[in-house]
Length: 117
Length: 109
Image (cartoon, rainbow over all chains, first blue to last red; front, side, top):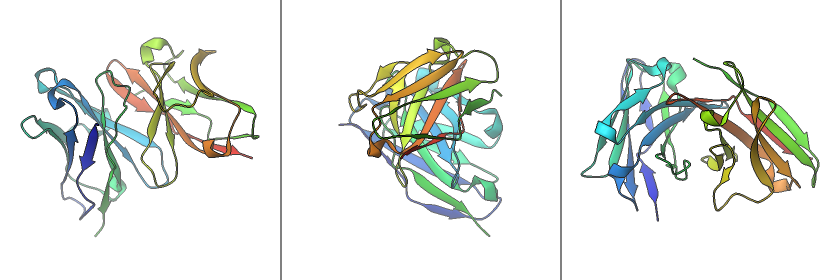
């Protein structure tokens, strides 16, 4: 059974960085892309980017270019999303989802990141 | 970046039929946009109902179907149930980048 387990909630100050992890189990991590998505309170979803298996490349949404870094550790089956220069409007629930032809079948439980002074 | 549009809200009667649509600012939505539909209940993570326009997951109730309709991607619910009330989000692919619509709040009343 596939599981994506994300790290716990974070509270950060404006200007700081946050790193959210997404630990996969139940499948071969290196064979599937990982998408990162966020949802601000009461808002819709925003696609942030994809961490691909092929040569471990990434594609980021234009909005987050320069502020987001997505990495993956194949040895532990964990994906990471690092967002820097945090602003109040980055307060959101951040999700990882398994891609790569699975139809986004599997999602993490979400990680609440609160940006507050 | 493209803008993906959805109806902000829709209401359907129990047992009724409703169609949610997903449009693109770049023109007609095609199968090449690989439309996805997600359902979200309050306080829960989303779950994927439809992917690549028409494909369902094992948990997708048969009353949901995906299609292309009049230049948009469409999610049709036939025989609405009270448990279908929630938010529905579509996602389109643009040469690898993905863009979500704003979501549709569906009320079954």
